[in-house]
Amino acid sequence: MKVVVAPDSYKGCLTAGEVAQGMASALRAGHPDWEVVELPLADGGDGTLDVLLPALRGEYRQARVHDPLGRLVSARWGLAGETAVIEVAEACGLKLLACEERNPLVASTYGVGELLLAAFEAGARHFLIGLGGTATCDGGRGMLEVPGLVERMKGCTLELLCDVENPFIGPQGAAYVFAPQKGASEADVQTLECRMTEWAEIILEMTGVDVREMPGAGAAGGLGGALMAFFGGVRVSGIDRILDLLSFDSQVQGAGLIITGEGRSDLQTLDGKVALGVLKRAGGIPVALVSGQIQNREELRAAGFSSLVQITPDDMSMLEAVKPEMARKNLELAINAWNSFPRG
Image (cartoon, rainbow, N blue to C red; front, side):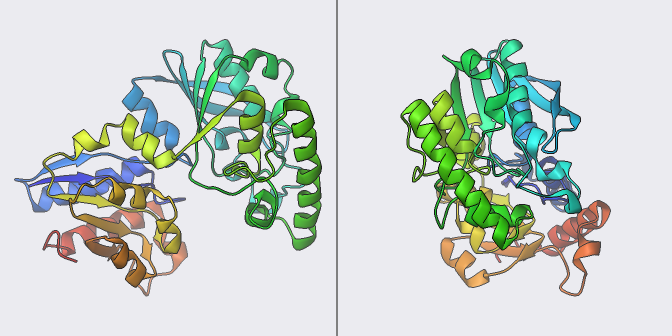
């Protein structure tokens, strides 16, 4: 039997490549006659660079940029011909800050502008930009402060890999929905919403683009809206675009089973995440969901997953479960114990 393993990362624990490798290794050990294809995935968030760049046969580059608090860091990006692969979290991500440093009132996207400029100067004219994991809620204002960026980016094409539809402002906007995840208090959220509202009006005056209710403009703390308004960025489904670029449909031809997964599966899985994207593109092939934790099982089964496998024992603490070596061990044990594919 041919099996395709196509997981997302187990966030904060294992990369998508490590998860795919762990799944595949256990499958090959238990079923040496099976053809196992490894296809690690992402949806525009963390891991997008490492998933896309090999498929595009590009090369890794690095740029010195300022992090959300203005400190110099080395940010990775990728170049394949005239196409740049950018993860904005490399420059303004939560991963760059300690928990006590998180403060969207001061965090800036300036480093994203520096990263875009570095890619442009290296010859990039088409940009695949993963929006996710940011520590910011400045509406892209910091990015636009980079000298010469707006002028240089004219004529470039930008694809914004993003599956959220949140608008720039309002109850479902960047401040109310995402800022609390980045360290904002209730009072901070009100301040940020006022700032974003004022900034949206300035954007409208400067570009003629009204981002206030634009779907996806609230992505990455409003960075999505700035990229759309100033650079003509086009929002595309992150998972669908990545599946296309990885030739997913041809990769799964002839497969009897697809295995996907993520760190935690719940109702959010059904809101444009990697696992749902795989399920929608499976073409009738059974799709098993193998994740670190699984909740909302009834809803996930109703969505169409053929099997639900949680790798973390119920009595194991999260602190222990997210240790990479423990996660690898749990993944191997779970796959080995699951001997009747594709039955749940």
